[in-house]
Length: 447
View (cartoon, helix red, strand yellow):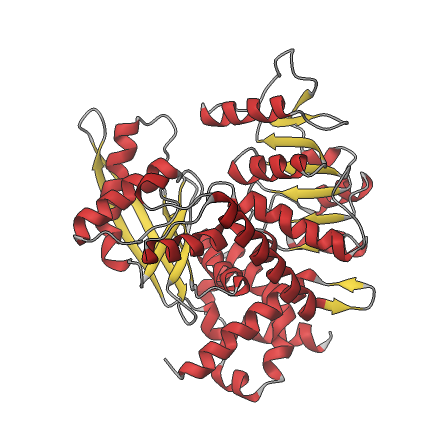
């Protein structure tokens, strides 16, 4: 066992036993620790401060009941959480997700990852994540509004523009953010930027909906440029049909790439020569209607393969944009077999540890989500600045700023991830973010 592995196992054994019952959290911790433990041990101040131990233990975990009435007047009860990871470089920042499968394990790992992702942006943002086990499927808009208002009644005391600024995530879009923001503003008696992802009419930012997908493509462009290659004519397989997947596809297509696949849990739509804009619009319509993908209209020159994944088709680049742990060892091998040489994560931790081992064995260039999908939180940070200054940027200004932030992230990650023959993006992202967090933690003392 090498020094890095030995230090990682020693570190993991020091975590509370309860943490080892959270597999996603332990996976996220292990991936970071493998890269940064030697960095920490080589700095006496960071070792003494036990930086990674402090980052592994969130500042607080808030758990609360959400009680609300459905359209029939029946009382419904859900559980909500907010995990505030670290605010050493700025107010807590991270999304809210509403899904019946949400667990504390998910939110612990996402809050930990968010601390590193936000540190990479260069913006003064801490890390957090939250949500509820509420299922919006089949609920009326009135029910969703009442749930959002009840959720905010419980969460409001813990958030604010200089304290904790949530955003949207799975099943929390612009409409839900509007309901949440209205409830917060009413309770606080203030009109401030306590949430991001707001509509343009009440303090939102242009390009916020597109930001994560666009930022992913800007990061991918920087990777390719460093390799002496271009995006044009590259075949790209994308998983998912949500905002990240669709906007990444749209930007990639606009820049000359061929997006050969999009997917959901029902299956994959595939076009060997690239999906058309009409196909992308059809996917957006299905998503908006809450419907799964299926057989396509005759006007669209593509196929739908029930139960298939995007990784089963020949491609140059893979962009997993659906959910965590979607690429295991078998899926990773399928990617390799189908010619993929570069993978950049649009979702949070979509690649399992076994999947990563396969990618590394076959020298697939890999960029983790904490670097590649940071565009969303980057524009959220810009929205916070705009709201505070009461000066709003045009779409072109935001897009230009987003490109600059993603280029800066790539530069930071490349510097710390340099190796013979290329860049270890995973190590570069973890080390660059860790250095910023560690410097802030040691500067502020034992708190």
